[in-house]
Image (cartoon, rainbow, N blue to C red):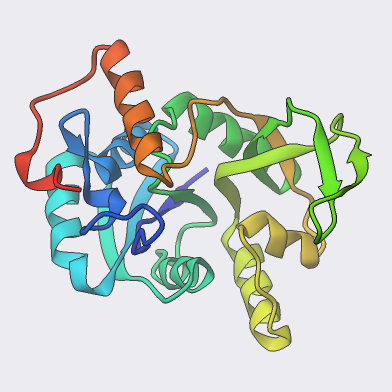
Length: 240
C-alpha cells in the first residue's frame, strides 16, 4: 500500500489573527507544520509527502520540509483560494504510480503515526476512511431567532478529523463531478459520499484538534510540553 500524503498548509489563518499563517508559527520549538510532516514521515506506509503552501510562502515551506522530513520524497506546490482548490492542487501533483492518498490539515499538528496507519488500513478494507470523534455533548437544532427547534440524537453523530484516506482515482472522480456541478464540500469524505464511495470511520482522539484560534495554539503547547517533546523556541516564528 503506497500512499501520498497531501498536507494542506495553504490557509491564510485570518480567523487566527496572526501576521503570519498559523501553520508557520512555533509549537514546542518547531513550526506547526513540522509536527504533521514528522508524523507522516515516520509511517512506512507513506511514500510521498506533498505540502500545499500559500503561493507567497512556498520557499518557507520548502525550508521546513528540508529540516523536518528525512525519509520520504517531498513536493511543495501552491494552494488555491479555498481548501478544496488547495487539495486539488496537491492531488494533481501526486506521483502517477501511487494508488492511495491521505489528506491532512497542517492545522492538526498532534496527529500520531498510529492514527495515520489505522485510517490507512481501514481505507484499504472499505475503500476510504477518515478519523473522527463521537459527539459527546447534547446537540440542539436552533432556528434563526436563536430558539431551539429540537434536540438531535447524538448517538450516530461524529466530528470529522483528518487524515482522510482514499484511492487517488476516486478523489479525482469526485473532484471532476464537483467541478461540473459546482459542488463545494468542507472535506474529502463529503465529495466521496456524492459519488457513492463507502467511507469508514476510525475513532480519533480529542488531541487531534484543529488549531483555529490562539487559545488552540496555547492548548497544543501545553500538550506537547506535558509530553516532554519540546525543543528550543524558534524566535522568528513566535510573533503573533
